[in-house]
Amino acid sequence: MAQKQRNLILNVLTIALLFLIIWLFDRYGTDYQIRILNNIAVFITLAVSYNLINGVCGVLNLGPNAFITIGAYTSALLTMSPAEKKISFIIEPLIWPLNLIQIPFGASLVLAGIVATIFAFLISYPVFRVRGDYLAIVTLGFGEVVRVLCNALQNITNGPLGLKGLKPYTNLWWSWGIAILTIIVVQRLINSSWGRAMKAIREDEVAAKAMGIDPFRHLLLAFLISAFFSGVAGGLLAHLITTISPTLFTFFLTFNLLMIIVVGGLGSTTGAVIGATLFAWGSEALRIVESPMHIGPIYIPGIPGMRMVIFSIILMVVIIFARRGIMGQREFSWDWVFSKIRSQRT
View (tube, rainbow, N blue to C red):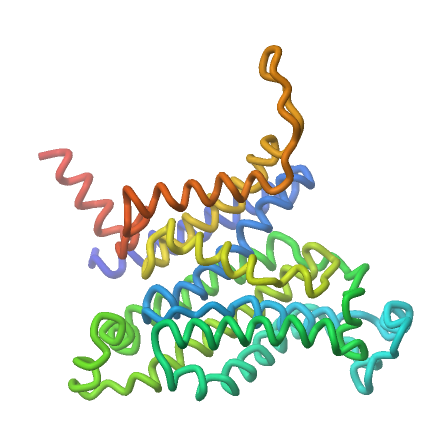
């Protein structure tokens, strides 16, 4: 059997096994277990798409929270019924025609991604005119502008009140289906000639340009794809937590994503998946450190936010002792697995 055909069969079997596990949890799992699995899948989508522009292209983008916000509000406004919108928008009524529109959840996710992509395209020209720290500041500023607008545009976003009582459409099939789709699309792009050009730009933009690679065109493609999946993940997130407000999409969300891809390994999709899984699972496992506890005669009061302190310490340890993250820029592959098996036999 050809190596390529063998790997394809193993990939299909792995995806089938994953869906079998999802079916078992969907049927027999508790609400708590399902919630954690949904969180993991949403963060995998966010981390893999964010890693495409930050890790693969080497562009320090600090504004993914803006695209997540746009996707979350777009999906929420499109799935709410006119009656629900009338009840939610009590200070200022929602503008026409949004107050009359209601579409299925799947279509709202696609539109959430498209609207986020349109905004990414509109800011791409000023963003990619600068590099390095300046680019980071521009994208950071865009994230803050979107958050402030969400507070100010009462007749579109309901301002600081946010949107409450959203239908919990996000389930394991939606969240994991989109996570797998994101991994496949991003990985196929990375392994294509476009992906190799993006890596060349990351390593040395001047040399890549001298070889005939157009940096703007390649970075723009990565930026738009990253924004699209961030918008879709925003829609998933909105219908998972069922309540959204501008305070949910601060720079803190971007910091979490940055921490995930740095710990996993910048430039590695496998690392982004591992980092997102550890983060989403660890966030729940470490809730115990924020609760009051007794260790023998010693009473330790609960400290809200202690989980993030621990995550920050983990980030510092990783940067000090494994600067390239868990995976570095390596990827999981079946060829690597079989080479390890063969080396152990000999």
